[in-house]
Length: 599
Image (cartoon, rainbow, N blue to C red; front, top):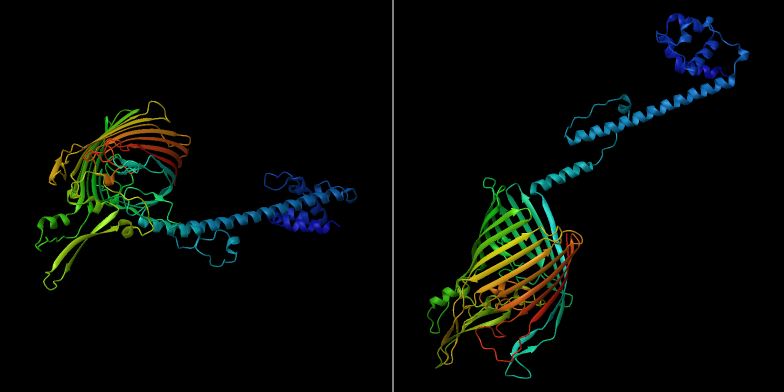
């Protein structure tokens, strides 16, 4: 009953071995097929040792000399178990061969993938006949790696682009508001108390930055805010759920030549390139034009960095003007005034000193020259109403000669630039005006700013002290109407501004806190008010205090509480008019609760 199995094993296992053995062994094995097969099977099962010639020791001897048990004494059950174990071992060998074949196929696919990445169009050589015998697969779509490679190539053509931005939610309240009209209870005095004001506001900004090559950078930013208000990106939640403006806030190109390290040329619409405080320029104001800067870093010196900046910024470009007198002749002076462009020119030198790792000191000196401002009416240019000149001629009629009449038509600025649904605040000038409605002074601001940083106190509570002093070198006497109607000149010494600020803490990591206090005093003509601090009730002829607390709930989420108190040191009518005694002059308080999320 075991003969078929023994013959099968002989054919599978020992047939190659018989060809390998010597001829004499093959003759001896042929004398008893059954006995030889059993002996061979027993030799394999028992794992007999090989002779020095490489043949098993039992097989090296003649078959006739081997001591074999009689057929009756054999134990078929034990032999069957050994044969079963041998078949199981053969099955395991076949399984390992199958796994090896799968591994070869996987390696072949990896070779094809690597060849594709190297753009080697040659087909990979077949390593094994088993792989070569596999049927050809159907055409496959481009691999994910190939598609990513194409996308990366296209991105590399335009350079790296970085997206960022922020969203700020604000709840804001005003207390202590009043106007400068005659008092309702006592018309001899001025001022009427107004009810508190509460509003919700939103600011959203989306920014993109990129580079082209090693020398060119570019930037775009979009922001909310009224088009007519250039010093605020806040959008009041009002107007019956109307959509809110979201417009271009920045767009610039910068050039940094490799042959001139530290030099940068920039053009477009961008942040002011000089160091400043909100006493002179509001943080939300973006400027248009060109600027040039050069910076040099010193590694082994107390003077760590020196920077020079210059800028040329057009404020208002106007068409050529042609103004006639009442008799029809050309008014040369008024024509020049009416066609004069406005611009801001300036330069700044700033240096940063680091006497130790715990101390840093920055000092900057800037000059800001506003060209052409004395030829404009701030109500016409900066106010909420645009005054459009209108000239028409009444033809002659009988004995009445022809008449030319010149007048002005007032149109709300928001109707032209932001649609009729925008009810946001608009900027207006609080500077001194002559009796003809024009600005009394020119504006050339010399601004000195110093900042001291102390890091010795604590890692999470660094300290910074900042002081800013500005003076206007082009203040002029104010022209008002005298008692007889003639021009009366009032001396104008309202030309200085002061800003002092102290900071403790930071908002860089989770749980950080920042405490900030600012004192500011701005005289009437110290700065050009359409462009400076928007959070005070009036932007010049004021004294103010700002308190601020910030908490970082996350490195990208900050809660801020701000309080701004504004006072009028010269009463409701300012330094160039007499405010009746007893008039209202209470301080105004502005509270802001902000949640800022950066991404």
